[in-house]
Amino acid sequence: MAIHGDLGRTLEEKAEYRRELVQKGEIPPPLIDPDWQKWGLTVGGGVFMLVLFGGLYRALGRLEASGRPASPR
Image (cartoon, rainbow, N blue to C red; front, side, top):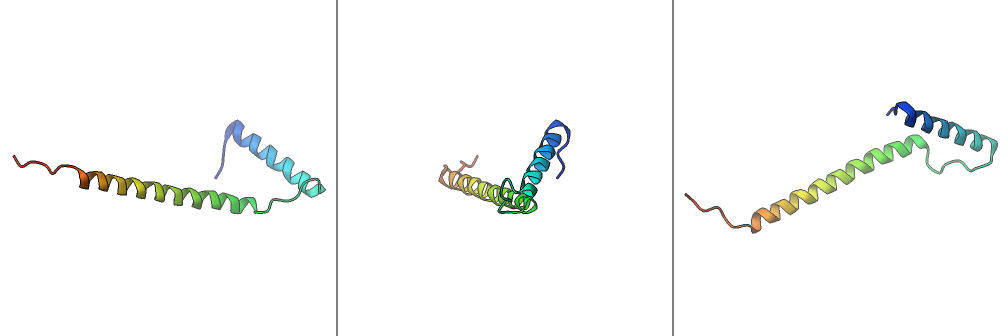
């Protein structure tokens, strides 16, 4: 996943600065590797979307079931 433009440049600069501080021992390393963090966000976001759409599907099903039947014409 590549972020372009000013935001991408800023994120890269901050990440490089953080790596330098970790190498100097001024701050502790992250508990979870940043590559795994990206996967966690991706998988977590996917699970969230599945739960969200599943809830919407169920709610719409309940609305449809509780509605009046269509009158034949």
